[in-house]
Image 1 (cartoon, rainbow, N blue to C red):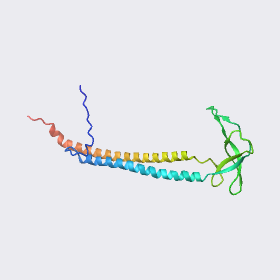
Image 2 (image 1 turned 60 degrees about the vertical axis):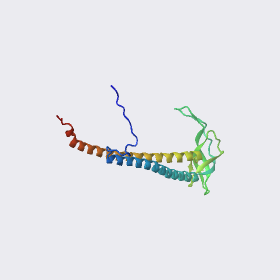
Image 3 (image 1 turned 60 degrees about the horizontal axis):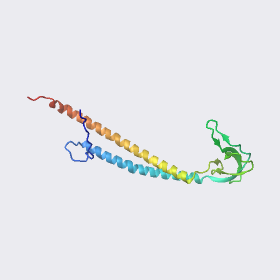
Length: 195
């Protein structure tokens, strides 16, 4: 047996054709509008989100200040992970520093393993004088901004495409129902035998 070949004709919804239904034209316009909205809207949302994340990252980086601190006790030596066997060269240890208001504070932070008591180390504090991790680097900040913006744009575009697909399915269902009603009316006439 010979397999039936299926030929795909591009742009058939836009061509004049006596078999083209009104729903085909509406569906073609919805496809065009959906893709345009997905591309333009996704780019706009991505740019807005990237700008907002960039502002938040810069605000966070600006709020961290380096402060000189002194080790209260010697830091423990490097530790090995029980499950992984990896050696950790940074350990938690207690440090003392003076904040911008002149108050002496103490806290725990990560320092190089084996650092002796009395050694000066640099720690990072927030605007209230609490210990925080160091600010992220400019490369990591740029990657975070870019990936977040691209992700938001992609999600927005996919949501628009999904909404367009839902609308197209409804139109297609209505067209199929209308065709079934028409077939129920005309179909029995085709089954008659003529002599």
